[in-house]
Image 1: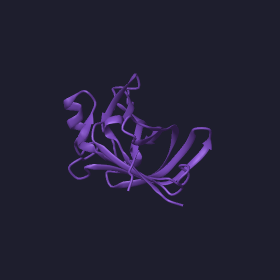
Image 2: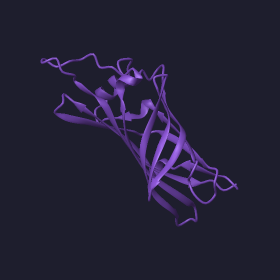
Image 3: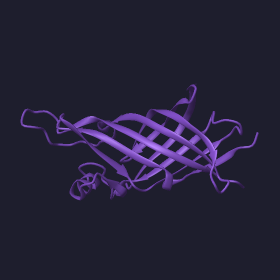
Image 4: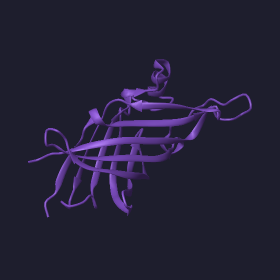
Length: 179
């Protein structure tokens, strides 16, 4: 059976994160520059699809330039040494209806860990130019300590300034690349 090759459309996609701050609120942010592909080995559905996503750490945006620069520093992402975050899938599994799980190797700061994310398949459609598109909403959590992202700050009471879990949310739209 023929394979299909899909390319991420950054103009119709976004990648966000959220982390607790001082246990009283959350800081949210986005990555503005990213790319990705996926291949479907079966022409009629997305079972056994293989995803790759690459995120430019320098494109982090939390709506605060000083915080963004601090996040790029060795205290957090160390963007000079590790400019990219990468995800390589190992399994795309159908659960029920439009619900799937996406498991793969996430690499941040040169540290690779397996993660499983929840995926809602939005469907397929052709746009006004006849280009076939597929949309996915992806959600999950990663622990920042698993990737060496440590904040040395503690509050006066001894609590962490930042939470340990980072909530991830992405809306990704891909276009089919016709040979």
